[in-house]
Amino acid sequence: NGSTFIFISLFSLILFNNFMGLFPYIFTSTSHLTLTLSLALPLWLSFMIYGWINHTQHMFAHLVPQGTPAVLMPFMVCIETISNVIRPGTLAVRLTANMIAGHLLLTLLGNTGPSMSYMLVTFLLIAQIALLVLESAVAMIQSYVFAVLSTLYSSEVN
Picture: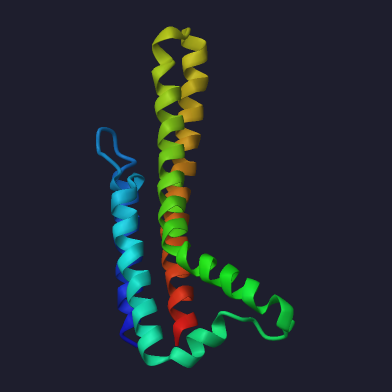
């Protein structure tokens, strides 16, 4: 169906941006909330608008899980509403935080190099290469997680 191309494009965009940030002196745009929120918020908002306009009954039913006791229903509506509203924020913050963490660690380790002996610099280079491999894996995993969670959120609306 047509939404598959949106999620593949989203995955590709995030993956490309994440990998570009692994090169020296190239800024990682996905390490800023402005980009990640501008990807997550319109996507989530379009899902919500579509769901509430076309599947109102289903959206109301989604607020109270099956088998919930009548006493807990008002609390469940509040909890489910809050959990639904924070979804774009969690998508954006997860991607941003993971991109910042790895780059910050690489930068901090790289800045300690000039003050070290040659023997320790060798270990530092090995550690930096290992972290770069880890960062590459994180770049792929984070773009996959963003795309899969967006797909999951869209499937709850239909």
